[in-house]
Image 1: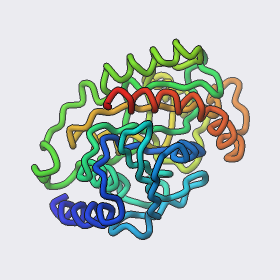
Image 2: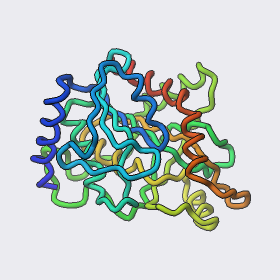
Image 3: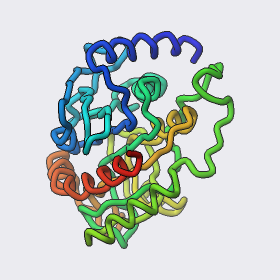
Length: 274
C-alpha cells in the first residue's frame, strides 16, 4: 500500500488539470445505472484509460469513464462503471479511484450496484439501502503495509454505512411512495451466478441481496474516513426453489427502469451535504 500515495497524487493532479472544482461527493454507478451522470451541469468526461493508474472497466453496462460536474449545484465526481475482481484486477487497483476521489476532496461516497434478491419479501425493481455487508471475496483491499497518510491500520466497521444517511434515504422513498428496503449485501467474486445451494447458504448467513462489487470500495472509503450511502437495485430474484434463468440483458433493463428511484435517493443525499 505504501506505493499508492504517489500514484494517487499523480491521478488527482491529472484530473484537477481538467476540472478545477473540488468535489464534495463521489458517486459510483453500477451496472446499467450510468444515466444519472447525464444530470450533471458543466460536465467534464475523462475515460478511465486516460487517467494515470486507473484500470479499464470491461463489464457489461459500464461506460468506464469519470464524469465531473455539478449535481443540483454541488460539485460531484461520478464513476460511470467500476472494476470487479472477476475482471482479474486486485482489490487495491479496483478501489484506487476511491482513494483518488477522496484526495480530490470528496467526503461522502454514494455507491450503487445491481444485485440479486435473496429475501423473499423483495421484488425485482425494488431498491435496498445497504445497512451492513458480508465480505466473501476472500480478499481485502487494506491487506499490506498500512500507509497512515491514507487511513488507520485497523478501521472500525461497526457502522460502515452512515446511519443518518440510511434513515434519510428511506424517508425519501416513503415520501415519494416507492419501495426501498433496509438490508445486508453480500459480495462474492463471480463471474458466474450462484447455484441453488449457494443461494440457500447466503440467505442462511444473513444476506438479503448478493452482488459482485461494492464491499471493496466501502472498505477503502471507511479507511479514508468518508461517510457512505450504499444503494442496491434488485434486478433479479435468487430464490432457490423458484429460480429462473437470469440474463445480462434483463438485468440491465431492470436497472435502467429503476434509475428514476435511484436518482431521487442520490439527489437527496447530495442536497444534504450542501
